[in-house]
Image (cartoon, rainbow over all chains, first blue to last red; front, side, top):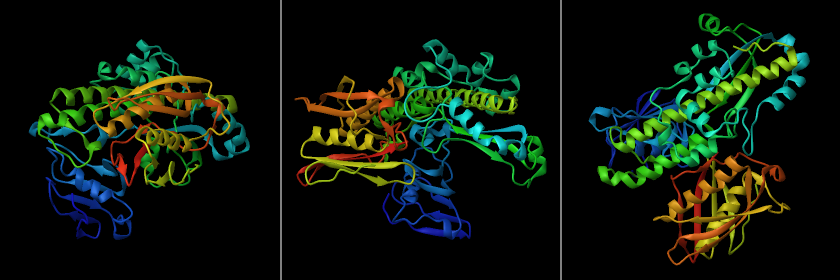
Length: 319
Length: 144
């Protein structure tokens, strides 16, 4: 895709990148003028145009208001492909951290109860929550146990005492994404994942103790058990090294099989295969397995946070 | 992060909005890859003064140079995630078939000083490896 790209304003909040070159659809950027990336400093719009070349893409290659330079896709880039029309799956488009996500836990404690003991709570979290360099998760797994995590996600963790049945009803897909194929996950990914279930990782991942400052939507807040002054825990983590390796393995496969399907792309990280091809189906199965790993990981981190609150306040309640 | 810049062999770290970019250069293909590994390790660990405790043999090869880099960092990250070992140094030797044999010199993670976001691998996007102006140059976006 040739630069510079021309951005055509459609509304004050929506801009169009006209089709050019191999683009199959236009690009659409949702942003006010002040949020638009400066092309010279940020290649995210060119990445959006590259995504528009994916076979089977429908309507447009979208960019959300937080769009910024990623690899393959921009961060904040969104695309859908029509599976029935030979639409593709692009593992690099889904991203390295498969099922990266956030959990919010509400405690029964309010700010005034936690503040006097916040240093002790931080020390407890330091002990309870593995993070940073090297292996070391809350839960060390044998190969067959990791296989079950990949099939059953958080359900397997809860069934083995790492959480409450109620947890499953409160998280995505009730803790398990269907269609997982652990046999499509490489031995190298297994090796990286065996020692990291229940670990935060690094980068932008975090476990934060937060306080509800203000209630804006009382109905939603009530559903989450949130009241003003309530202390919460927010956990942001994903599928760790296993998820990265699953993505890398399948990008590597598709880079070499794309030509078989007549696909030529401007960025190798966008490597893809038709969803209904053997490579596409294998990738969906492996990604579901990695997603289940991410769900189990957040479940173990939930339990680690509960332990830290129990050591500090005598109550494990975080829901 | 330490940038090591001189006329012949070196590496530097460049900003990226999502992650980090590392560039390396050297007179030889193998030397450039060695320097790239040192550059990536420098983004997350201070290994100065650390004596390697083990040697891990490595063998990498691929049809394309870019794939050699991906395979090399798959190894570096596997050692980190699975075995808790940081690559303190690396030695590579180019074989007649253009593949590489070599050795990772590693130490347990608790012997190094963590100092940055930990890599999970490298992206295939904007991956560069080639000869330019008499030197080999490589450039990777590191996923953290």
